Length: 410
Image 1 (cartoon, rainbow, N blue to C red):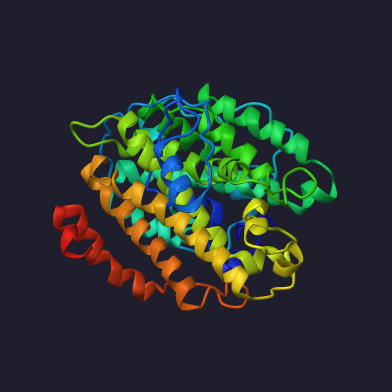
Image 2 (cartoon, rainbow, N blue to C red):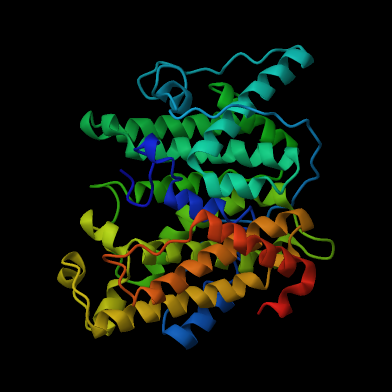
């Protein structure tokens, strides 16, 4: 299983962690300024936490487009997602024999009916596997909600490819990924392979500024967690940053054209704080799950930081708490908070209806860092957790902050 996800167990009804971190951004990630290899967030972190930061260079700013309204769709939520839905016809992709596209009705009304049903399926899947994200989409109009559901489902299916036991046992990972990349290219060419692909084709048509690169980069990020193909250690923060970008920042890049920016702001201006939020969320996930990752033989904390504080890999694998480890976790929390603080500066740059999902995600995730402190930095035996009730209590304060009342609560 993808170590930062819960895709392998439908009964848990939990979202993929890598996806949750990115999707919780509410679509505010954007392309980075390619003229700089280190942004101001990196410089701030270097001052406060002695670390660097890698900024991906292969992206270009995307401009948001206006959306049209569609009526909401109410669907039931079952407890199991059949493989045929997640993977398309046949329950898988590489050996399905499908090389063409699904037949899209030429009649406008039939076409609309097909998309309505497919979007309903996207809504159903999102409501099961990404409850926090799904709650956040409720603050958006239907046009934006449906588009983000479609994107989430594509990300979900991508995650399932690298988690597939069949792909590992039958050694079909390379073929599956090659086919999935081809399907992605076909989506951009308006040749969907199934009805769920058809929704993303529709999203692409509604928001033509969407770039294919974040989708390609996410596939690379998922591979980084595949045993034998990816990484189980990260020597430096620069290496970890690239991973965080690929599995978290990419989702925001996908959805930024949908969410849009406020009057007077550009996508390029919102880029740096948006990217900072993606990094902050993923760093928080990693800090929360150190113990769980150790059980899988993985250490996401940069080895250079372990060495700096006198913490060994064996110590983490054996879950040994001491003062050195606590100081190292304090260091990691300080780094994550710098990214959260920088991200906070960009929230008012977003389209007004996108601010609350982003603001609430930021506030809820930042609270996880507080819980790690409350647990005396023991993330081996205690999982930092914010309950659903506590999340609901955070929402009013988050809303106040989006209404410029935030100083009352800072």
